[in-house]
Amino acid sequence: MNGPEILIPITLFICFFAMVFSLRYFSNRERMAMIQNGMDPGLQQAQPQPYAVLKWGLLLMGAGVGLFLAFLLDNTVFNFNNGDHHRDNVAIYFSLIGIFGGLGLFISYLIEKKEVLDKR
Image 1 (cartoon, one colour):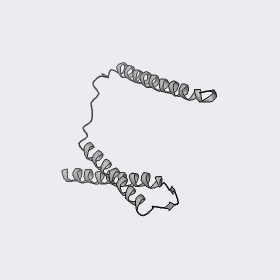
Image 2 (image 1 turned 60 degrees about the horizontal axis):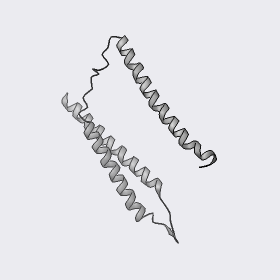
Image 3 (image 1 turned 180 degrees about the vertical axis):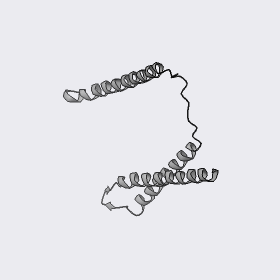
């Protein structure tokens, strides 16, 4: 490691330290402002989220289906063998994970909306 290569670990260490310091500093300032306004910073009420597990489950299932479909398409439909070189289709993996993950979130939204309307 001669020359500019040594700057990479030094820069990473400094940035990590600055991030941790700033998070701690601003968290402390937030707590002090809450104390000054007469609020108790230790008793923040968590809002119930009954559909959080459904949302995460459908998101991860959609991402898994997208990844599996991208693998199948990559190895069957888009299998371009030009001699020794196998062309990587990285874009199809990211796009199908995003599409099916978003589809899972949309289905979660529809289920939540239906449940809220049924309760009225």
